[in-house]
Image 1: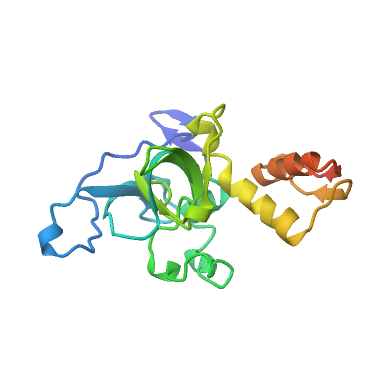
Image 2 (image 1 turned 90 degrees about the vertical axis):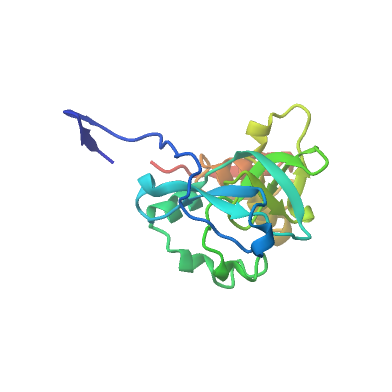
Length: 213
């Protein structure tokens, strides 16, 4: 996107998020808990307008899931498409992800699905959530949480869960990949493509790949 400002042409590469203020508050607590500490997450208030990205207060609701403090959260292509308005939210509320979160249609923020941080015991973890992952805290299903290797930084770890879960489901669960298979991987330079290549190499596969121009 070209932007003409103060007599110069350029483009916005970074968007500064304003500090949490009284922008919007979601409260599910009864009156006596109104002073409870609040979590916050990032959402785009107007799809297609990146300047409308805001931190939003969200009280922590008791749940049986694992409570984790987020140190890093990744934005992937899906998030960019949602924030830009090119991917309507309604497209993600169907049966494709119904098995992950049955009440997703009732949640407003769909941005952010992977993170790295620490669980309630202080252990370094990375994981996948169904939405609202660009936050100060998340609640994750235990089977979507993974230990972060000692040699990895949490920043590195935040880039791993979504693409590798996608590849594991596609190649191992659905594709039944076997050692020595030949495999065609489209968009090999993208996140999922790079993960697919790494997994295929670990199986000793013969790899063919395409790369967009």
